[in-house]
Every structure is written in structure tokens, then in C-alpha cells.
Image (cartoon, rainbow, N blue to C red; front, side, top):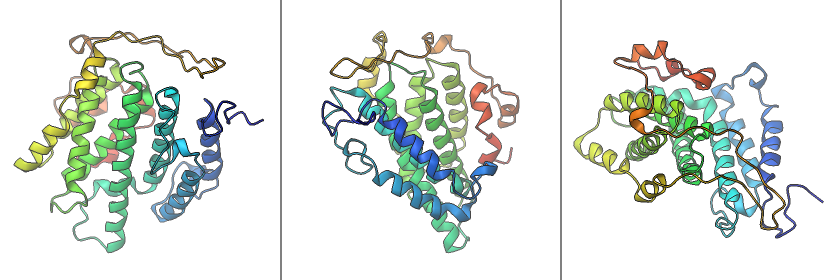
Length: 300
């Protein structure tokens, strides 16, 4: 018997299926050049992409990357959460070696550099879509899920930098990038009322948005994509339940690891940022270990 397989329905992933798949991903990428030193060279981007695509192809139907089987989502909410978390992990790894290309103006660059930036934009947009799916799974029940906060913030910050550096206004999928940033702002606005980390990220993103060189039509599209979701608005007014993940047979239960207090936005402590140079003095908490604001190349 395989622990990652369900005894209820052979097509239903078990509550630990994502752990098995993430372990397989870890085994796969640990063999890639540069991983041992903590970095992956842009020259290895194609190798990374092939490995992740191979990993994606191993997913069961419920986690499929293009047309997932969603028939279990309502009765087994953990399936959707695992799906988006796995998608996020894959796109994050694919983006890592070429992420820096988002922060460069490549109007006069070589075709290879432009192609690399185009892929980085594509992976960022897919990552943001997966973040949106994960956000809908966890809000407003577990808004303290730091993984989704970081992924939304990180992808949005780099996409903001991409627009800021796009002086020639030739960035591939520029319109979708702007809409994606707006969507991220909308999500972060909701999350900002629940944890200090999200509140800090929200302030920084809004400072970045102020610098976006948008046309009147682009600004309209941005505002439309960042408008509040009525479904989330109604959910946020409800008290969060005591979450658990239970199979229909009732044999699996996982309580939240840690409870965080809920705050109103006006009660949440936020950093005082008047200029981007102030980012140097901000305590990012756990985020500070993995996010380097200098990598945005904003000329701070």
C-alpha cells in the first residue's frame, strides 16, 4: 500500500501526496549545477525548465498543470490547496535562474536575452495565477500562511520592477503584467489586515506601484484588476473556523500549527516608509532571510 494513494478513490490524492511530490522535486533539482552553492546560473535555465516539466508530467489528474480534475475540490478542500502549492513550487524553481532579467531594460538586448525575459514574465504570471488560487483556498481561514504572502509579494515586486525598467514600453505581455500587479495589490490589501508580515509587504508594494509609469488606459486596467472581490469581502466578515483537513473516512486530521490574532487594518503596525532607502532599516522578520530588496535594481 502506498501512503500517498487514497483507499477511497484511486484518483483522489491522499493528504500527504504533495509531500511525496515535493520530495521528488527536491531530489531532482539537488542534482542541478549550482544548487550546492545556493544559486542556479541563467545558462542552466533550460535544464531547470526540462526538469520541472518532467516533474509536472508526473502529477496525478487532480494536480495536472493545464487541465486539473477538480471533482474532489468541494468535498476534499486539501486537494485544491495542494494543487496550487505544487504549481507554485514548480514555477518558482523555473523562475529562479532567470528572475534577474525582469529588472532590466532589454529594448536593445540580444534575442536570447529578450527570450529569457519573456520566459521570466510568463513564469511570473503563472506563478501569480497559482498564488491567486492558493490565496482563495486559505483566505479568510488561514491568512497567516506565510508561503502565500511571500509568493504574492515577491512576484508582484519583481513585476513592478519590470514595468519600472520598461522605458521603451516593449515588455512582453505588459498589459497582463499590469493586471497581475493589480490583482496582487488586491490580495495583499486583504492579507495586510491579519499579519505584520503581510502589512509590511503591502506598504512596500504600494510604494512600488506609485512609481509605475502607466498610461491612462493602463491605470484604468490596474484599478479594475485591484478592486475588491465581493466573495472575499463577505468571507472576511466571518470568524475564522478551527481548520482541519479530514478525509471522508475521517482518519486524517491536521490542526493549525500556530494561531495568529486577527487585527483590523487600523490596528496593524506598519513600517514608516517615506523613501525606498528606508527599506534598509525595516525588520522583515522571517522574510528578511530570503528576500533581497536590492535585487529589484531600483537605483536606491
